[in-house]
Image (cartoon, rainbow, N blue to C red; front, side, top):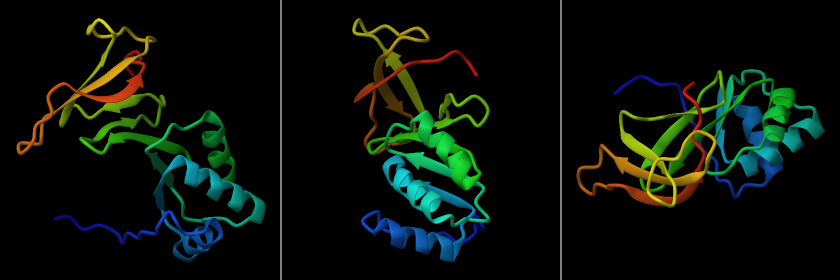
Length: 157
């Protein structure tokens, strides 16, 4: 539908040294990976001194991201790390704000609720269950589906 630049995929089962060599050959503008894999790549690039000259942004999915990993990516790759919150059942739920590091819910495609044990919305700063209603899956709608994650709502960005 839209013109895009080339994309490349590599199995996460590939040895970290081979992943680093593959990345150096392609010198990508963007990298999307899991935080655990990124941790190993960052250690490899830091130890080797190799650089990805064109890198503009790193995005992570699927796991929690530590502040330490964010700091190391800034130092080693010279770019910010942005995280994406998603699930297998409903896809992208929230994308990290590049300014505040808070997450913006993808409200065009779903409703995300953070609920306490009493079923009421939790206030900012209090942890609750993540409950999702997708607004785009007409074949199998998920209404108030508990994905078994916990989150803490923040103040508006």
